[in-house]
Image 1: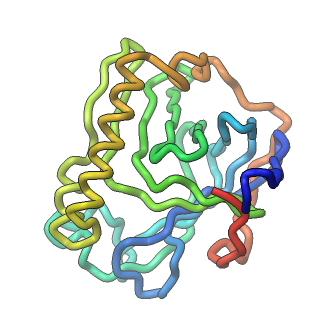
Image 2: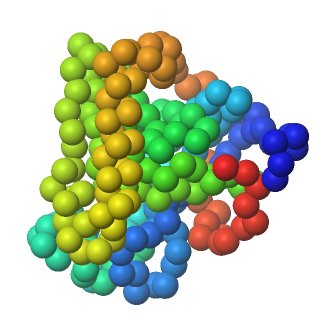
Length: 225
């Protein structure tokens, strides 16, 4: 795609898939290990915003015997064989925000009664756009950001173990850490999207929960980054 070609934008209320490629052993042989149907809130040149509603049927990785991944000791968490299973997102919904080309997305979490809890910076590969959604690759390291503008690193132990297991090369680890530092600079300056008031957003009560399609793991033609 050249810079003169127009990207087809989604319309608020459209249903798309937010997916992550796998980086660990997968007995099912699937390339996609996380798939979450979401509803488009906004899709512009500046930002893609989507809503993952409570009760959404998703796909997540599990160990080969069905055990949740995080119940596996860290030392073998990324080397034990895996498969995928369908499950539902219980608890509050999640608003996800992604700016084109940025190596992270920002997720917003609420508690009961729409009490805003925190932002979550998910460090990841810049998303690849296709007709039915976006694909990315999780980079293990994350950042929590709180309403008082304090922040802290998350999952540094998993980030280190992923490097030891060979899932992230030393060069890539440096890029991920640099991306995290860039995100911290945005947080410290209280730039977008933290300053944009998304914590006051609410979903359209008329939206239905999107369904997980049978071909959720297909490999479509890429449209744009």
